Image 1: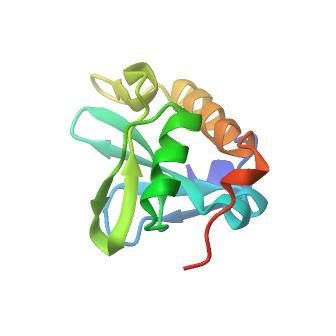
Image 2 (image 1 turned 120 degrees about the vertical axis):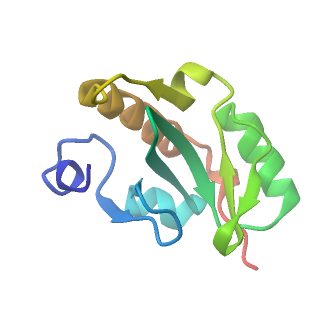
Image 3 (image 1 turned 90 degrees about the vertical axis):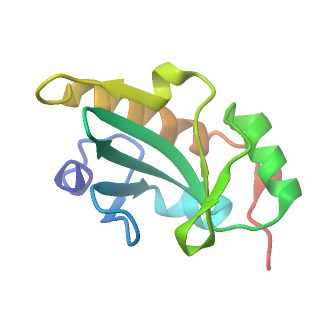
Length: 130
């Protein structure tokens, strides 16, 4: 997944790193959209499924409510590092089950769709100074 971002194979994402707190998760983002919104995508393989989360470090509850409304995600839960993790309410975007190996074309499609949702946020969703 990181190599796909580095090679430009995932539209809309220009940065990728392994998650600092969760082994098996990779974070993807577009630098300009991240700087504007403080949002990124975290994708992880957990047992026999791939999970897709939108994540922020912003702690403001009004910001969380606005993100939930505009991105059609749940209200978010705080996990390690004081990051808020949001699940898409459309569970077909949240979880991809597999038997032996995940369909990487489908992982890419979902990643691009979620990155595009973040990019499409209006300017008023800019991250708050804390």
